Amino acid sequence: MNWQTFMALLGRDVRVARRNFIRVIVLNLLQPMLFVFVFGQVMTRSGLMADSYKSLLLPGIIAISMVMSGIQAVAMPLIAEFQFSREIEDRLLAPINVRWLAVEKVVAGMVQAMVAGLVVIPTGWLMMSPGVDLSLRSPMSFLVMALLVALFSSAGGLLLGCSVGQTEIGLMFSLVLAPLISFGCAYYPWSALKAFPILQKVVLLNPLVYASEGLRGSLVPQFQHMPLAVTIAAMAVVDVLIFAFGLAQFQKKAVS
Image (cartoon, rainbow, N blue to C red; front, side, top):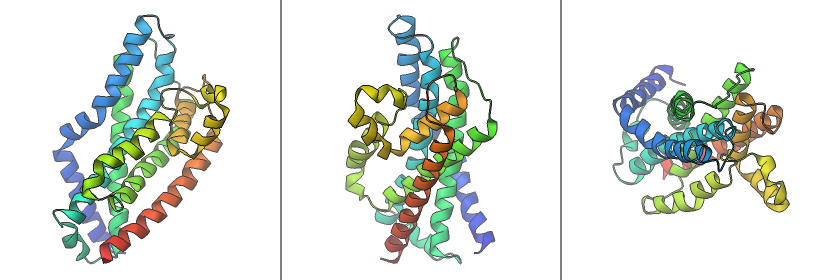
């Protein structure tokens, strides 16, 4: 491990992200904030939904923002670097193991995912006030959950970026990200699916379910949610698996 090279690569990615900060934030916040306005303001003020729904919705919006930000921050540049600009070839010549290049990409993606999630909290709270009742009773649980969600998003971006072709980007959003978000319990709690028992069990294969329920349990524990221990354990297992597959796919792609 060459820490000097690793930090130089990470510093380069952080600097690029900082220069594009406004564009990145707008791209990652536009869709979540539209959902916040429609469901948190229009639907509640019109009386179609209870005012308490605002508090239930916000953790799910945070989860979506983090997942989308991390995936886009890692997957999109990798697709371009491997298949279009070939910029990755310069990185592969760096005096560092190939796998550590992938780790650096994941760490940089985690930073962007954490920033996106932290920006959504005050932005969403301001847009939906009054009526948002967040309760950070266990800051450590929230921090652990946020880090696990950030790792899932960036590791998922690594796996997708090394597996999807440039012409298949639209298919990736349609077949992977759209179902991930729709059935990720971001806009409703997992317990709301009890009327659909088969679906309620099937969605347990979706990592976003544990991300949304975990953030919900740490920010709005007054609502029904999965036990935090279960969501943290599930996210940890998912992160290890996706990260391992992503590293293997990156090394295979780099060698080829």
